[in-house]
Amino acid sequence: MPQLFGNKRLIFLLVSIVILVMLIGFSLRNREELTWPEQFVKDTVGFVQLLFGKPAQEIAGFFENVNDLRRTYKENELLKARLEEYAALETEVEALRQENARLRALLDKKESLRDFVSIQATVIGRNPDRWRETIIINKGEQQGVKKDMAVITPAGLVGKVQHASQFTSTVQLLSALDQNNRISAYVQGKENVFGLIEGYDEKRRELLLGEIPIDAKVEKKQKVLTSGLGGVFPKGLPIGEVTEVKPDQYGLTKVVYVKPFANLYDIDDVMIVKRTIDAALQEKEEAK
Amino acid sequence: MNKWRLPFLAVLCFVSESLFVDVWPKGDLYIHYFFVPRFFLVFLVLTAMHFGGTRAMAYGFIFGFLYDCVYTELLGVYAFAYTLIAYLAGKAMKWFHQNWFVASLLSLLSIVLLDSYVYGIQLLIGRTDWSFSVFWERRLWPTLLLNVAFLLVFSYPLERRLAKIRRFEQEE
Image (cartoon, rainbow over all chains, first blue to last red; front, top):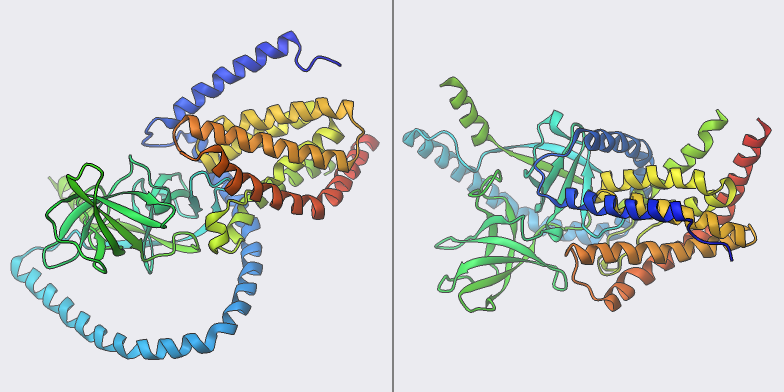
């Protein structure tokens, strides 16, 4: 049997393993920005993916449409019933909005953590090996996307921008949250209860909201929203609904299970959310 | 013109992996089981068979690096594995008969190798806490199943295509 590796090749293999370990170490550091060769590679591949992806998605979309047609009647009935509720809600929201604007004018407080502008984006790729659920979208720094911005669908929060390169960016989905990437959130109630989204329970397919005081009152069915306190998320983006409350393993704080509103897996179009208060603050600083 | 046929095929296999996951219906099956397409790896083994290990290694390194950069953001993992698998496949092809059936079996073997290796790395850096049996049941089996289906449909045409490209190159 011939030898699998010659002497020279064995040394080469060992050197490669050392380089591999070094590269992994380099990538594991908490990097603020990707190096420019990485950004360049990402944008180029993103462009190629867009070329091939459009036709593929159109074909897949056609089959989905055929599937949808079969359910149309039932859904239509349900939607009709919902429409009346919606009209009532709409007038109420409008009234509240006007009142809010008036009160703000009274207080002379123009910016709010709530205000945001959104950037529309389409998913152009996914991480095929799925060890970490990420999606690639077709907007990047050139369109104003920055690291850590919130990514939403009309239903609610789905993730945050992990890295932005010039024309594409990578979004880390909520289902792939790790300990380093916590999101500040609150449970809506008579008294708002603040906590941190700390992780994702894969079995239950629910998010974990931790750091909640043991005496706080949290009940099932209450809504969980972003608080806008940490980082660049605006306030009031819907995340999900409380399904269970229990004390944590040391009994010092509570852990709340939150069922996300948005489907964290089936995502086609997203919006990247940019807080307007940051831009306003920046302008003020520049004016000084 | 002929020079670009092989790279084009490589890009097609590479991009189709991501597209496949994107287009795949996201039901319970998708959430519970991990069907990982390894189309490029099949291409790599077939390339090693027709064009020799050295060329396959070059492709493996370049596209492995692209995979790391674009998808996993964990540099070096796939670049290393793809190059090594291309090298081993090139060696193995000298011992066996060169036909698409042997190549298909070798691709399956390299998929097992690659996925176990990536699982090992994820375990080492603490990104997963799956035990081996969970990995076996939820990831390796579905992945193999998907790629067997892919091999049944595409390995023969792909192999013919590569043989044709080789003939074109030899004529020049």
